[in-house]
Image (cartoon, rainbow, N blue to C red; front, side, top):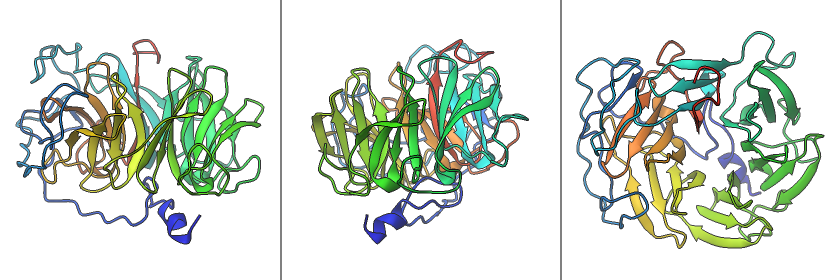
Length: 391
């Protein structure tokens, strides 16, 4: 890895891997409260409006100022249609809840669609002796009983028992980066697999690895510390490794802004450039298109087809709809997109067709740990009803 890229995968305090970060918060109106359904006019999408995955690219248009909320936010909302006419869940625009890695507060929380915290980690006795907690991603494991979380800043990946809220497995050497067996260097996007293994993007070592429960590397994509784009042989600083239903992976490369889809055997299905300055943790939507968070300020969320053609882009440059270093954007079943807006201390749900934010947890530009507050929320996952006690 070149020195410039070693700097690029370094962390800012409480942030995702990046080269040079300039925080320039615009004088945008604050959204009142910690959870709210957003009103119309909060943002503009720089694409032709249309269903998710079916829009066509259009020239960027000037962003209209977002409208501030007209009333204080509350933790519940009545049922009814969103601006796009889509039926809502009883308390929000989606069914179930969200698992949020609230990195700046050193916790993972699960919130329902009404903004109520129904589960949190850690509690007393959760962690190994002498360790603090600061997960930047957390995902529900296929076994339904555990979460898998990565701590980039502490160089470890952990599995957490949902019922007892205890760390029951850890890989890596706490606060010590490396490339030898048992070590990681800036681990990102750790997912539990159906076979009990864990797959993780080992950013600083330019590889993706699969780790067995007995802590052996049983599979590797890329060559350790070979940080060039030559899939499937090597990858240029991979920060995403999303497991796919067909057994393959979706690998995101920071350097060169590339996304590679692999099949279960590791063969390249597509290898595309995406129009993002800093692509982060790409996902597939229900049409097989690629949804990308652009980890910049102003940030953006966009979708491209498997050939790299831009389908839509959400990227307001001012107002309440502006994003500041969004790190993860996950499509929901109804076509909306759940997004971690790290720099503005919130998680939002975007409706690309309606060109606006339709749901939010966190108080915009006001980090904190009280009710309705987040601090550098860096990871999320939609969770179905019943996945977490109380949901």
